[in-house]
Image (tube, rainbow, N blue to C red):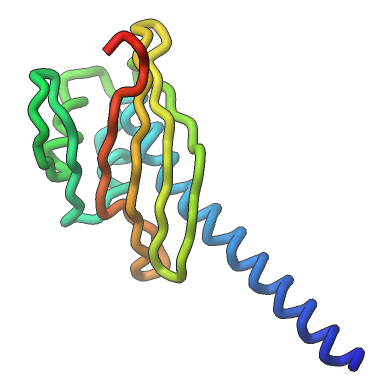
Amino acid sequence: MKSYVFTFILVCIVQFSNAQSETSLIEKTLQNYIDGSSYNKIPQLKSAFAENATLYLTTKDGLFNRFTPDEYSGFFKNKTPGTFNGRLGKILEIAIVKDIATAKVEISFPEKGMLYIDLFLLKKENEAWKIISKTATRIDENK
């Protein structure tokens, strides 16, 4: 009986450790997204996305559109790389199921009083996690 309990505990520890390492890898991908978009670092921003990722966003004129990672990163191209643009990001949630994951990130612009929630789908390929889809909505009262 003791060997079964030991084996069960060992399996639980290994699974917990694997989940922690996968969470860390996903956090790294999300941090590349956050830092790349907050500091106008286009290569870092693009590194977070799968090449064929799809982003669904509402534009400034209120239209709901689909964007590629290249189109999205183009939003930051006329800004000085490495310069903070006022955009803060905070990872709120990550849920992993085998080789797919969801994540929720809060994006704020404190000086403008703007607050968004970004939702992500991620996929693990070749030992790396990449964003395969993103959408966002503005949740502050001033919208």
